Image (tube, rainbow, N blue to C red; front, side, top):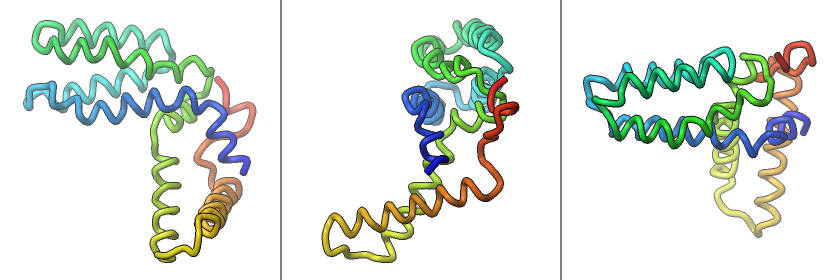
Length: 160
């Protein structure tokens, strides 16, 4: 279960980035349709910055760029994006930072659990469901440890 514990060590910080990512999708409602792609690209630029200072600088540029044309968008950015920048405070390398700020790992885990429980359809009781889900999670944890790593776990590469 090492992979799962590693993922949850900073679980208090990860949901903020995921929240910003999910909100980014609905954020496009605040934009003019012709600007959707440029807004999404500019938001990605903020989170793909090499460090926290550059990310804050990119956020300031983003706010300046859209302040007059889309004030609701800039208000949203000022209120929400700084929360997502907490991933920069962990001192992770860029490879791991990009992976921890998304929900891909947990989405894949949830998809696997859903597929396996759908096959069983009916459970005798809550404990039987818990046993199956636990087995699936342990199996996936073993895969994460033995296959190509989603996260770089060596001390040299994990941190900047």
